[in-house]
Image 1 (cartoon, helix red, strand yellow):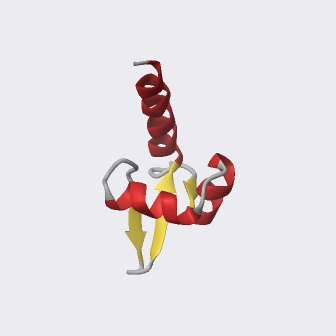
Image 2: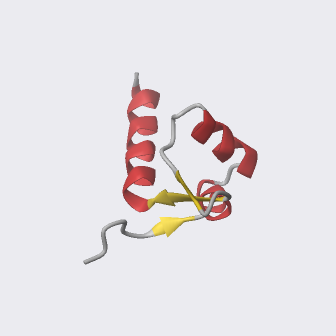
Image 3: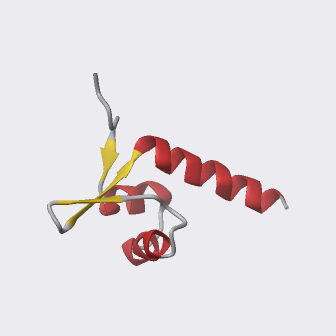
Length: 63
């Protein structure tokens, strides 16, 4: 059983969304994108949290 699912690094998400890694870091800091810190320094974003973030952004764009 895979409890966390696929995990992405900030750099991977940055590349997927074609935005600067500092933008991803700001979204995490502003709690717009849910992420978890592993080993005190490594940020990881769960695939389901990334999908939710993208869907929310699409909905926001429709308003």
